[in-house]
Length: 451
Image (tube, rainbow, N blue to C red):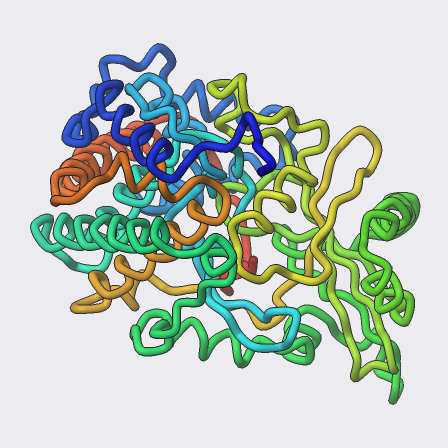
């Protein structure tokens, strides 16, 4: 019989998880003490702006100032610092890092089917599994308040999210590992907010993106298309800057699998633009390349998105070193998602590191309005189930399930934590609004920016 010194029995792994309750009890996760902060949120946000495009920093602060949830979306560095001073389980999995209700969405799988999963991994890193759950708990609470729910309803939604996570993790702990790796959530289309996102994704075809982001270069019939100008959200890039962006396709092609290289070889780049996306990413360099394959009716859009270090990196010195942050994001995404973008990869432009992925290919996310009424609790359960799948794929479901055990104490603790952290987020948001960081309002188009 072949023996592996590093192999542990299922019982040993379960016992390891149970033993971590001595490090931090399940019901102790209800605590948050803002007095433990060593640096103010505004200073942490200032630090996170270093290296960003100066002209867009005000825009990010404006987006964060629009609502407590908008602030929360842009304040991952603040929550990373807050989580780092709390006791943690030491049970490590791949973290989404920015687990909130709008960072799940629909997109096209490699086989063309629409899937719904976690879909934003800018902050991904290996760390204590419960950090994702605490960020999701605060997110569900803030989204509940933003969609008209009372705190009792929002807290119940958080508890249902975590209860679903725990139940699914216990199920994964009993399944063969190969089944965990290919587990699919089949009931997603029956959940109203998810169904709405899938409908949006169905409409977000490459041809729709072509009409939305490009225009004919001249009034002549059959004139080639190019990116529209909608400053500051979308700006054409030309000259040496465009050449540098196109040159980054060289190292990107080299890291793609041969079949993806072959597919990409049929597309020629037509135009380049700079695009403002999301909230947390505003101010980072984000380029789009418009390609044509079999003529103008065969468009492909690639997004080349700057990736600095994860906001959690300063607090997780034992995490795998990220020699390339684009690679960190791509590999974290593949670790947690059931199916990933076939063009997912990474590259560099000068000394900056970038993720590469398709732009808007059948992508759709929820709106907070979708979470009114029964939508919040139903959607919160989906969030819990998908986080459980991501953590089970990238961590050890037996260790996590051993820690969670049975009972509702862990879910109740995170329900309370969600309220406490939402309260603190609202206070931090008011502090931002009172600060002098907003200044003169940046003019921008009224249409929503796309991810």
